[in-house]
Length: 112
Image (cartoon, rainbow, N blue to C red; front, side):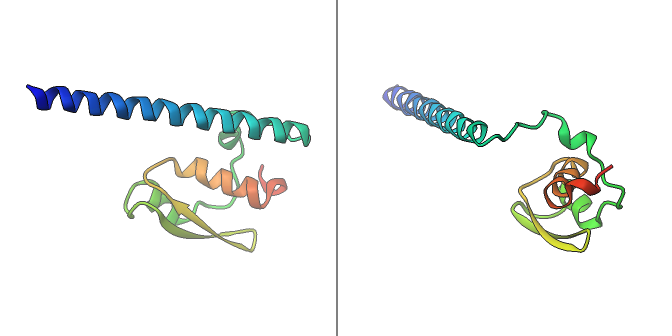
């Protein structure tokens, strides 16, 4: 019985720590957004990556990484308009969004 109470107390402490960390990250994000706003930067629309689809075919390595065929935090070498880019993939995801985001960062005027 006492070990269950101790375990519950430990879990409660971890939840409290996670909340405090989340609040600190939120505060830092707000500071960063204020700095970006003061510098004249505008936040992109939440779906900007879905609207910016490059004409170039998606690399096979990026497709494989999005399907989870590689280990997490694995590098994928990409060629974007003659610029070599190394993307670090942290796990399964949407390759189309990644590809569009890379194009927006490297060659924003080349995306149609």
